[in-house]
Image 1: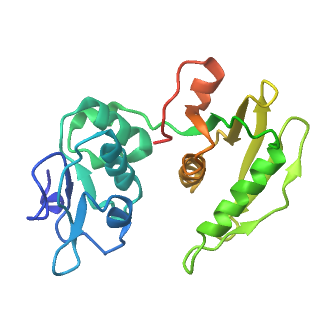
Image 2: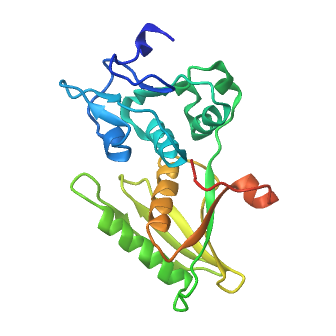
Length: 231
């Protein structure tokens, strides 16, 4: 660990830590995992408690991926946690040198079930995701939308939250609507992982949706497995 990565003195003992004199009070740690992070008197965040279960670990890893200035790091030795952080493209946020040998993984396909929704169509799903984005917008987050467009085998929905950085999400059904499939381009660009996160938050926030499964392009093409989360 270099001098620039010294932990904040209030960090709880354990794997995750906040680098001292790094925080800009972006509030990503506290808004994502308030049970794990807190602010000191100078509004500098720190780890008040280490994750104690899978759900909390998922949140801690998500924080490492999205916190500004990359102030949240991992100094532990759990190989699965190291792998997951490295797969988000943040191997440099692990103190362990083992992370350097792990390639990033971009999960751009997701499938799910929505039983007892006989009214569903790919176009309706695209509309529901668009409405979720509209409801998610706030003073500092504004979306732009292109028209929802039917294609030969799917429905296309394109949106952006930064000027000229549009992302296209495609909706289709599998097995006559028993399973729904949403995917974006396999070519990752700035913001692509945020699209996957938004899709995941939308899907898991709907109690009618179940069996959410995420795949990278290789996992989807080769049927080599899936993950519960895109990160």
